[in-house]
Length: 398
Ligand code: NAD
Ligand code: MG
Image (cartoon, rainbow, N blue to C red; front, top):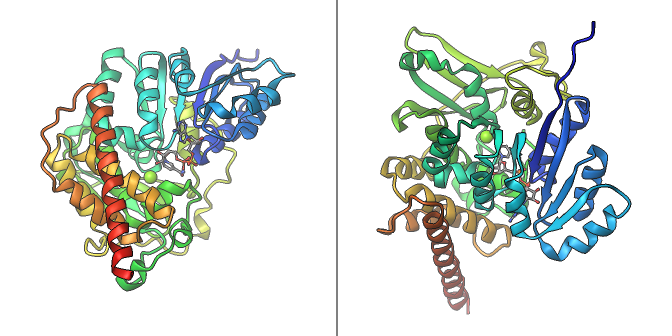
């Protein structure tokens, strides 16, 4: 007799992004296993409508309300309810499902995750910035509601797969691998002149613009150190980073009996996404699997902290605790956007983050409201700082 498959209900926040589109591809591949409830995007109404139609979603939410008429028009002949605006997005985060993917970029994803935690039985999180800035709040909320958080970031998903919870006292350290990004072999002089086009051209992974710039500065790895601290409850001195340019070993856990357990795969986000989608089962991926015989070498090296100070700053922020990780993240988000808009040079991103981290702050940050308020304050200050820097450099040129 054929076994009866249970259909699980799922939602995808940020379905039009890089992680979002890979998730949609996997949901199409496994369409017999899932009922799609909610899909959300910020601006791309036509792709959102196509996805909602293809997967038979019940609701499609566009964050930018001015795009709602376009979304409604595209969906007028289909049984998909179209909604628009931030409030609609937040309301739909409370829609109860078995599994939800959080793949919005940046702190814009904090409130949706916060609201989804009591209502999604399993919350898969790709969106690392809220974990960095508000890790305590989100992890304790998940515990309060008995919600399972599944890490989707490839390193954290790798660690999740080889982290023996019952033997956590036997863990010496976790080792995050980093590709080193597009500037790994560049001189500091060359890096100082890097353009947005060069920074977003990652050698191994295809990703959204913000995380690609973070990979180039290695701030991405810095954010991931803080993310790992919250997800696995590991202290900073038990989190290590190693450069692994081939991006085949996605991370490792080292045990005190001498064993180092690693997870490997092609550099394709579909592997960690499908791992989270099927969890606790292992369902098939639509991506080609790794052919180990084609690998000629796997290499590992120490990161250069002089060339990539973002790593040093991230350890500093994690050790300081309090508001520091939030400040690091908020300034970085604003500075990366300014770099992508050609307002500041590439090395200016980390300079701005360092200045912000060195400012003393006394604001409390435990509730969602306090976190959102401080995040906005830091962003406003960073915008001002960038504006002044640009004015000064214009004066000097003039
Ligand atoms: P992306 O820029 O490609 O997509 C972001 C998605 O978020 C889009 O659907 C966009 O419409 C939506 N969005 C953007 N701003 C929004 C807002 N203000 N309100 C509502 N929705 C908004 O980003 P990505 O590369 O897919 O990354 C998503 C998250 O996953 C990031 O936090 C990133 O760090 C993390 N991540 C990505 C990868 C990757 O391979 N791309 C790997 C690991 C982790
Ligand atoms: Mg990663």
